[in-house]
Amino acid sequence: MLNGIIIATIVVTIALGYKTKINTGLFGMIFAYIIGTFALGLKPAEVIKMWPVSIFFVILAISLFYNFAISNGTLEVLSQHMMYRTRSFPKMLPLVIFFAATIIAALGAGFFAVMAFFGPITIILCRKTGLSPLIGALAVNYGALCGNNFMVSPGGVVFIGLMNQVGYEAVSYGYAFQIFLASLVIPIIVLSVLILINKGKKSSHVIDIPKPQAFNGIQKKTLTLIFTMVTIVLIFPLLHTFIPSVKLFASLGKSIDVGLVAIIFTVIGLLLNIGSEKDIIKNVPWGTLLMICGVGMLISVAIKAGTVKMIASWVTAALPTAIVPVVMAVIGGFMSFFSSTMGVVTPALFPVVPGITEASGISAGILFSAIVIGAQATAISPFSSGGSLMLSCVGDDEREKMFTDLMFKGAPICLVSSIAYAFMINLFF
Image: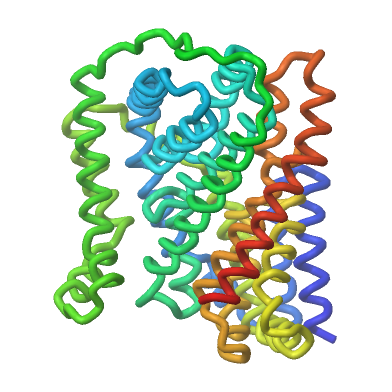
C-alpha cells in the first residue's frame, strides 16, 4: 500500500511541476517530508540529511568555474571560430553544427546556452545552403545534449554523482563515458543518413560567415584553464578504465575530485581576473540545483521504503531480459516529455538500476545509457526545451511547419534511434 502511494506521489510531483511551472524540486521536498516523517516515522533531521550534498556541491563548483567562459565571451568567440573554419563544407553542415555545439557544450556552456546561441545561427545557415531546418534543429539539439553529457560538463557530473550514490563509485566515470559515447555515435549515424537524403536545392561551395574576432588575453587564459582542469580531472579515471591493471591510476583517480578541482581553478580564475565573482555566482543554475536535490530527497525516501527495490523486481520479473533496456529508454523518453532529464528522470530512474542489474545480469552501464539516451530523445519535441527553443528561432510563416516537423518527424526519429540503440547494445554487449 505504502509503495503504491509513493509511486503515485512521484507521478504527482512531476505533474505538479509541469502544470504549475513551479520548480519540481520544491514539491519533491514537501512530499519527502510528509511521507518520510508521517508514514515512515523518520525524524525531520533524517529527511533533511537526504539532501544530496555531494551532487549539490559538484554542480555548484562546476558551474562557478565554467561561468567564467560564459561571462567573458570565450565560448561565444570559440564557436564563431569553429563555424568560420568549416565554412567550406556546406554539405557537411549538419555534422559541423553538431560537433561545434558538442564542443562548446562540453566546455561548460550547457544545453540551454548552446541552443540559444546556435539555434538562430543554424536557421540562417539552413536558409543559405538549402538544408532542411529540421535537420539543422536535430544537429543543434543533438550537439547540445552530447556536450552536456561529457564527464565534466553539467549533465555528466550529475550522472556521475547519481551513479556514485547508488553504489557505482568505482566505475561511474566509465559508465558516464559510455553515456557520452552513445550520445556521440547515435547523432553521427542519424545525421549522416539525413545528409544523404536531404534534398536541398542550393549547392553553395562556401557558406558566407564573417571572420570572427581574435581571442583576447582573458579569453586565452580562460581556455588554458578549462583544458588544464579537464585534463587533470579525466586523465586518471580514463587511464584506469582502459588500463585497470595499473593500480597507481586507480589510486590517483580516487584522489581527484571534480568539484574540489573546479573550486581550485575558480580561485585561480579570480586571481587572474578573468571574470567577476559576482557574475559567476549569479549565473549558477540555482533552479536546476533545487530540482535535482529536491527530487533526490523524495527518491531517497522511496529507497528507504523499499519502493525502488520493488519496481526493480517487477521490471525483471515481468519483462524479457532482451527488452528491459528498451523499456527503460521508453520510460525515460515518456517522463522527459513532462520533466527535466537531469532534474527528474535520472534521479528517479538511476536508483532502480542496481536491482535490475542484480536480478537480470544486464550491465548497469547499458541501463544508465539507455535511460539517458531515451530521456533526451524527446528533447526536440516542440513541447520540450530543445524543440521550443528552435521554434523561437524561425519566423511566423515557418513556425507551423517547424512545429509539425519537430513533433511528427524529429521526435520520432530521435526516439526510434534511441530504442534501436538500447536494443542493439544489450544484444551485442
